[in-house]
Length: 115
Image (cartoon, rainbow, N blue to C red; front, side):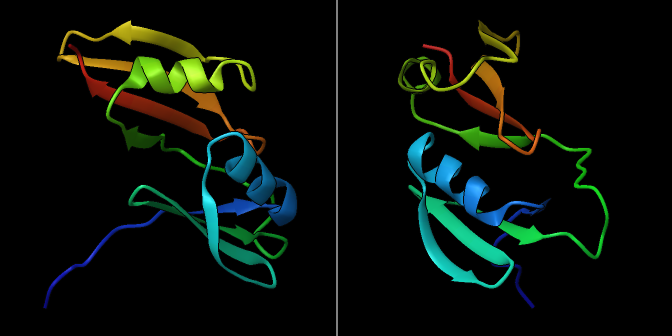
Protein backbone atom coordinates (compact mmCIF):
# COMPACT_ATOMS: atom_id res chain seq x y z
CA UNK A 1 0.00 0.00 0.00
CA UNK A 2 1.38 3.38 -1.02
CA UNK A 3 0.23 6.94 -0.32
CA UNK A 4 0.36 8.95 -3.56
CA UNK A 5 -0.31 12.52 -2.41
CA UNK A 6 -2.03 14.71 0.16
CA UNK A 7 -4.33 17.41 -1.18
CA UNK A 8 -6.16 19.87 1.06
CA UNK A 9 -9.91 20.10 0.49
CA UNK A 10 -11.20 23.26 2.11
CA UNK A 11 -14.75 24.40 2.71
CA UNK A 12 -16.28 27.44 1.07
CA UNK A 13 -19.74 28.91 0.69
CA UNK A 14 -18.75 30.53 -2.63
CA UNK A 15 -17.13 28.08 -5.06
CA UNK A 16 -17.15 30.48 -8.04
CA UNK A 17 -15.70 33.43 -6.11
CA UNK A 18 -13.03 31.20 -4.57
CA UNK A 19 -12.11 29.62 -7.90
CA UNK A 20 -11.90 33.01 -9.61
CA UNK A 21 -9.61 34.40 -6.87
CA UNK A 22 -7.22 31.43 -7.06
CA UNK A 23 -7.15 31.72 -10.86
CA UNK A 24 -6.70 35.49 -11.15
CA UNK A 25 -4.61 36.28 -8.07
CA UNK A 26 -2.51 33.11 -7.68
CA UNK A 27 -2.51 31.83 -11.27
CA UNK A 28 -4.09 28.44 -10.57
CA UNK A 29 -6.05 26.52 -13.23
CA UNK A 30 -9.33 24.75 -12.56
CA UNK A 31 -8.65 21.15 -13.64
CA UNK A 32 -12.00 19.71 -12.58
CA UNK A 33 -15.29 21.11 -11.37
CA UNK A 34 -18.60 19.58 -10.38
CA UNK A 35 -21.55 20.98 -8.48
CA UNK A 36 -20.22 22.32 -5.18
CA UNK A 37 -16.60 21.22 -5.77
CA UNK A 38 -13.48 22.16 -7.73
CA UNK A 39 -9.82 21.10 -8.03
CA UNK A 40 -7.23 23.76 -8.81
CA UNK A 41 -3.60 23.24 -9.80
CA UNK A 42 -0.47 25.24 -10.47
CA UNK A 43 3.10 24.01 -11.01
CA UNK A 44 2.43 20.68 -9.29
CA UNK A 45 0.51 22.19 -6.34
CA UNK A 46 -3.12 21.11 -5.94
CA UNK A 47 -5.91 22.41 -3.72
CA UNK A 48 -9.60 21.50 -3.70
CA UNK A 49 -12.68 23.34 -2.46
CA UNK A 50 -16.12 22.04 -1.60
CA UNK A 51 -19.39 23.73 -0.79
CA UNK A 52 -19.98 23.40 2.91
CA UNK A 53 -23.66 24.18 3.37
CA UNK A 54 -24.19 20.84 5.12
CA UNK A 55 -21.18 21.39 7.44
CA UNK A 56 -21.85 24.90 8.73
CA UNK A 57 -19.38 27.79 8.66
CA UNK A 58 -16.06 27.20 6.89
CA UNK A 59 -13.18 26.70 9.28
CA UNK A 60 -9.56 25.63 9.28
CA UNK A 61 -6.99 25.19 11.99
CA UNK A 62 -4.06 24.76 9.63
CA UNK A 63 -2.02 26.96 7.33
CA UNK A 64 -1.78 25.95 3.68
CA UNK A 65 1.97 26.14 2.95
CA UNK A 66 3.30 26.52 -0.59
CA UNK A 67 6.97 25.77 -1.26
CA UNK A 68 7.98 28.11 -4.09
CA UNK A 69 11.22 28.79 -5.98
CA UNK A 70 11.53 32.43 -4.88
CA UNK A 71 9.17 33.75 -2.18
CA UNK A 72 10.18 37.44 -2.61
CA UNK A 73 9.38 37.22 -6.34
CA UNK A 74 6.03 35.56 -5.63
CA UNK A 75 5.22 38.33 -3.14
CA UNK A 76 6.21 40.99 -5.71
CA UNK A 77 3.74 39.42 -8.18
CA UNK A 78 0.91 39.23 -5.59
CA UNK A 79 1.25 42.38 -3.50
CA UNK A 80 -0.97 44.57 -5.69
CA UNK A 81 -3.88 42.11 -5.30
CA UNK A 82 -3.73 41.20 -1.61
CA UNK A 83 -2.32 42.20 1.77
CA UNK A 84 0.43 40.39 3.63
CA UNK A 85 -0.58 38.92 6.96
CA UNK A 86 3.16 38.91 7.71
CA UNK A 87 6.45 39.00 5.85
CA UNK A 88 8.21 38.54 3.63
CA UNK A 89 10.82 37.82 6.26
CA UNK A 90 13.88 35.66 6.69
CA UNK A 91 13.18 32.94 9.22
CA UNK A 92 15.81 31.48 11.59
CA UNK A 93 15.40 28.04 9.98
CA UNK A 94 16.68 29.21 6.59
CA UNK A 95 13.44 30.07 4.78
CA UNK A 96 12.09 33.37 3.48
CA UNK A 97 8.32 33.39 4.00
CA UNK A 98 5.18 35.49 3.82
CA UNK A 99 1.48 34.82 4.32
CA UNK A 100 -1.78 36.11 2.87
CA UNK A 101 -5.45 35.20 3.37
CA UNK A 102 -7.76 33.99 0.63
CA UNK A 103 -11.37 35.28 0.34
CA UNK A 104 -12.55 32.55 2.74
CA UNK A 105 -10.09 33.66 5.43
CA UNK A 106 -7.72 30.70 4.99
CA UNK A 107 -4.08 31.52 5.75
CA UNK A 108 -1.76 30.76 2.83
CA UNK A 109 1.98 30.81 3.51
CA UNK A 110 4.66 30.85 0.84
CA UNK A 111 8.29 29.97 1.45
CA UNK A 112 11.60 29.38 -0.28
CA UNK A 113 15.13 28.75 0.96
CA UNK A 114 16.80 32.03 1.91
CA UNK A 115 19.43 32.98 -0.66
